[in-house]
Length: 114
Length: 117
Image 1: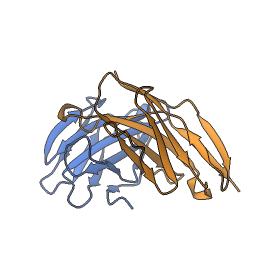
Image 2: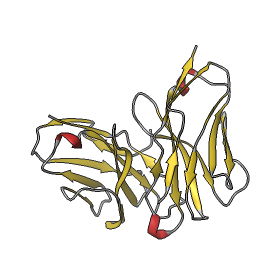
Image 3: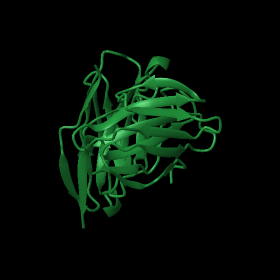
Image 4: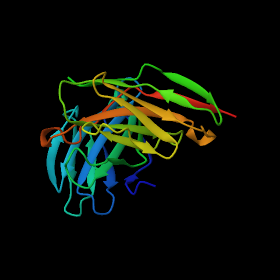
């Protein structure tokens, strides 16, 4: 158990809908990351937050947004969903924003868009 | 652009034997970190081992060790005394040092390892 908690574990929704994925980082970790794992794109970095502020942005679509709240939990919002958004979405956390820190992953949220 | 290449999509090994998974990466930077993550059928990403590029000594974690060749940009993972629980997909990952690159782990495509009894 990495200590990173993600909900829901599985989610099935229709095209055009909006979903929210939730993440609680490990106790004491200030940085939260979101990654997407799909069959065709592999594992891709989406976005990073550090202590409530956006820190780095990767290949995140404009239809997607995220935030980190004062209690450090984070949410990833996916809207206008398309079939191609079906993927495993990982949340991860680390102590701070330094790239040298180990990044611990949650168990992921399986999103299926039908 | 930084890339990570794992040239072995699938590998198999007999239980108790040793196997080596290959990884090469490409970067023009000098300071970075390398990782191997394991993804078992449960799909959770589990850190196996990490290596700082500035360290010449190869990292080891119990049965797992790496062969880090900085000049060749190679970072292979050796699993000794393979166990059935080692069956998983293994990802090599790379992250640049520096505040502007935080969080951007770059992953290879993965190697599926099957340990046979």
